[in-house]
Amino acid sequence: MLREIALADLNTLQLAINAGIERVELNAHLELGGVTPADETVQEAVRMTEAAGIDLVVMVRPRAGDFNYSYNEIEEMLQIIKRFRTLGVKTVTFGVLTANHCLARDKMFKLIEAAKPMQVVFHMAFDDIVPQKQGQALRWLARYGVIRVLTHGGPLSESIDETLPHLKIIKSLAQQDIEILPGGGVTHVNAHQIATSLAVNQVHGTHIIKM
Image (spheres, rainbow, N blue to C red):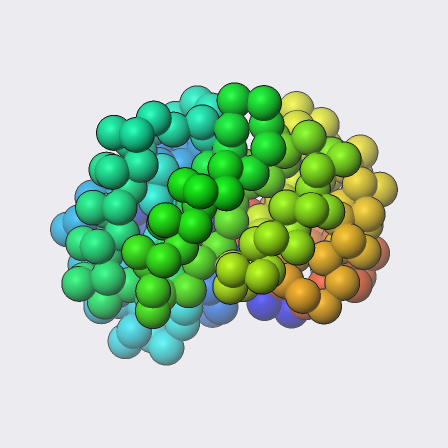
């Protein structure tokens, strides 16, 4: 089972590497749900994870709050993506929605194209998509090369046990086209149970590993 830790500083990154983590999602301000980290932090995280032989995913999110970004915010995200590519980042994670909680396809397409050849992950903005539109969103994301979707299966105010039934629906909608990564309340205590229940081989969380 692959464990991905969400973290926001280099000290925690070193502890996670020492503890045997398999993949890292680097953010700033986890208390806000995670936003774009500083270039200097990203550069050092690239060096540390490459030395440890583990994968690094870097957050591209210009602000906390909703995922309906303005033209200027999208332009900022494009510049961030460009900088991260030059820093040696291999995988970025972002998500953009419309005001009515659907996938913002035009904006997503622009960002996905700009990210190449980096891999793209769609983060927990997925849980803000209207449930009846999620299957359609998964198919679109898979078609345009997004490799994975991080999802809690519902609002973070609900426990992972409560959202598990909907996570199973999302997993079934994804079929084999795109990876589903459960997160939000997944810890080293319940990770195996969650992964087994969903028939997935990867889990995500801030406390996914004992350190």
